[in-house]
Image (cartoon, rainbow, N blue to C red; front, side, top):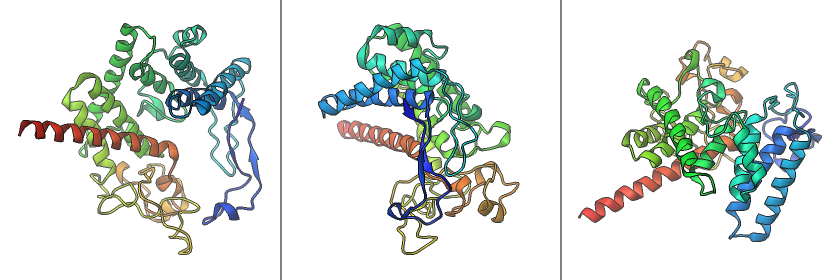
Amino acid sequence: MAHHKIHDETWTPIPTAPHSDNTRRFLRPPSTAASLNLAAAAAQCARVFKKIDPEFSSRCLVSSERAWQAAELHPHIYASGEDREGGGPYGDTDVTDERYWAAAELFITTGAAHYVKSMRQSPHYLKVPTQAGGGIASFSWSNVAGCGTVSLATVPSNLSRSDVEYARSNLVIAAKYFLDASMRSGYRVPLPAVGGRYPWGSNSFVLNNGVVLALAHDFTKQRNFLEGAIDALNYILGRNPMAKSYVTLFGTRPVENPHHRFWACQANSQFPCPPPGIVSGGPNSGVEDPAAKAAGLGGCAPQKCYFDNIESWSTNEVAINWNAPLAWLAAFADEKAQESSARVHAQR
């Protein structure tokens, strides 16, 4: 099985360089969720590296299938939601979504019948949720079912054509939901404000929903989905009530002081400032850190609950799973721009 996480026994001070961190660090116990996430990611790895690095690809597949088998033997080992000192808890007692994602990725990679059976028996089969992250998105760290459907809808496999089309139609339905939210927003942001609030990491949900809109455009060629995906990117890059780019070193007024222990020049000039391309979590109606509260954000409008300060972990945190959809959506926008330029050139 895979260990659920690793981090220090207490929260590391800001700033701290990795080589100067003397706090004791622990592997937390294994969990079913972590094992299934490993199985899914390693199955993807086996495909991606098959021609680039066959030896590494084989190692990935072995790790993937071993993790799957371990999770099947231990299906109810859940991480504690109380383990929150020194790192986020990431407790999760529903692993049906992780199991579906892992089965889908392993089916695509291997075609093995037992993965097909597990995948088809899942309540998530070919579905695309819009309730991940509290009713606002199709993906979140705690709900990865949509990842399985995206792979089945986009990666060539032995799945029947009718099932592929059904998966794609469900992605289009989800995209319509986010597009409707965008059309009701003055800033054209594809994020439903459930209860008039924005959650922790709201920018990541904007970007994830932008990915769904982009896929819907690829499937249907409808321009409204393309515009919705670009609107998501526009919001992140500065078309928002803060008139601020939430990506470091991009835009006229970019994020300068994300919550980070090493990119900490705001706290100590001897430490580096952030590199380009890091996306902030963005507005969070909860205003859950002392720095944001001291800045007077209490009672803020959802899209203005933000403080560009290294100590504002609830509005200015950064995370690799938040940067991933930014990279994906930026690549999509670049691809579409090149296609448009090629069409213009051909018409001349």
